[in-house]
Amino acid sequence: MKMNKIILGVAFMTSIAFMSSCSNNAENAAEETSNSEQTVGLKIAYVELDTLMSQYQLYKDYSEVLSRKGNNIQTTLAQKQRTLESHAAALQKKYESNGFTTRDELERAQASIQREQEDLQELAARLNNEFNEEQARINEEARDSIQNFLKQFNRTRKYDYVMIKAGENLLIANPKFDITKDVVKGLNKRYKISPQVAEQIKKVDVSDESSAK
Image 1: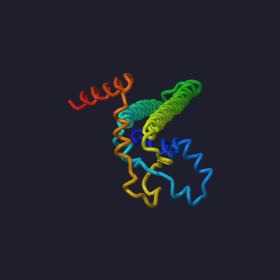
Image 2 (image 1 turned 180 degrees about the vertical axis):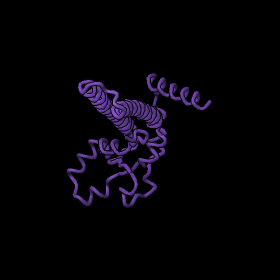
Image 3 (image 1 turned 120 degrees about the horizontal axis):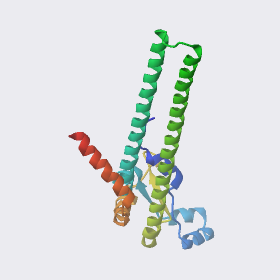
Image 4 (image 1 turned 30 degrees about the vertical axis):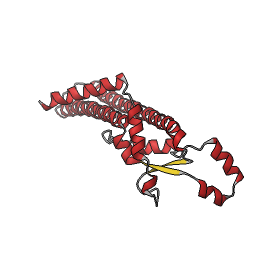
């Protein structure tokens, strides 16, 4: 389980379908023109996903929170796994040294180890589900934040499409249509960290400082 690798971009890019936003006037005009005329009249821009994710403060804050949460899950499960292995080793040692006086005693000990293993599996599944739900919630929040910003942003820019550029998904992209800088600047200007996230990050900082001493 690699919780420390927080990949927000894939889920975000899948959910956002980052092609927005046509004005009503543009849609009406498109219905009345030919395909060639539509192409000539389109106003298109794009945003670099890597830059957006590395510079938008919302992503930076939540990535830090998720990373710490993932590490905590790994630590918790690893500790419980070591405890389980220790109990199993102790049972095996007792069995090999004829420490069990009856068959029933041995079977009860084995059943206890089995229950412990099942509890660990259930815990791992629950923690993973909680982590995935939290990541999905953050992706949704990020998507809504960006789309709401673009609606305001596009009132003056009047783009027909704002597309996402992730790696080589756009084979040709003229840099003059790159609006990433303006979008990131606008998003960060609007962004206000929630008290809950600020508190979580504060706890991360305190924990890191303590471990470094």
